[in-house]
Image 1 (spheres, rainbow, N blue to C red):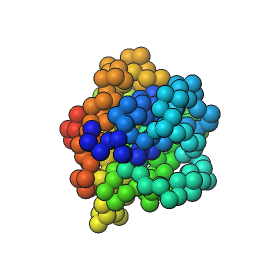
Image 2 (image 1 turned 90 degrees about the vertical axis):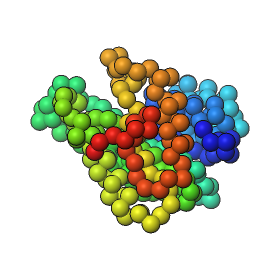
Image 3 (image 1 turned 180 degrees about the vertical axis):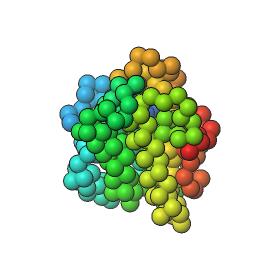
Image 4 (image 1 turned 30 degrees about the vertical axis):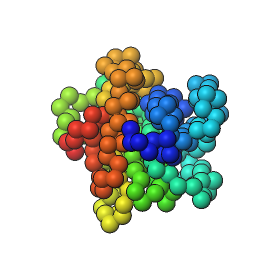
Length: 235
């Protein structure tokens, strides 16, 4: 990470478990000041992280499905400047092999609302809190790549991440003359509650290189869709 890591201020949206928690943990270990969000009461692991680093870790609450909660978080952060906004929150609600046409409408709507609309609302409403030289990163997935979809599966999850990628392309086009680095990140298939036991990567194999990639991109304008090692992912 940059030598400025100890001074960095990062907001991790969706840090209660899984990849988000691991990213918050990694940044705290590297000396950054971390604001980690949970939807509800902080789970024990996140609370313990705050106890280990009381001078560097604080916990906020936001449900990105609720625009009012995003606005309230933005208000609470007024006057603070972030070096990194990293939106990690997401859901996967359908079985791997379920065709999109068979998913319940409510599950489809929630997947799209959380993974695409909620993420973009968070980016739009919190962008003003990010330094002009800072970074806005969003957790996408390699499954959001249309070009790489040769195996099928995870149909609705894939669609939600592809939609997120498209919306970030539009956001980048609207903000082409502005400073923050914009990143869509594909961490790989990681063994978490959401990724499942069949995933090929452990969290400790995925997150440190992912954070290295975020930091290596700092100060590079424009939008990039990258894997955890910094390689470009086809759209």
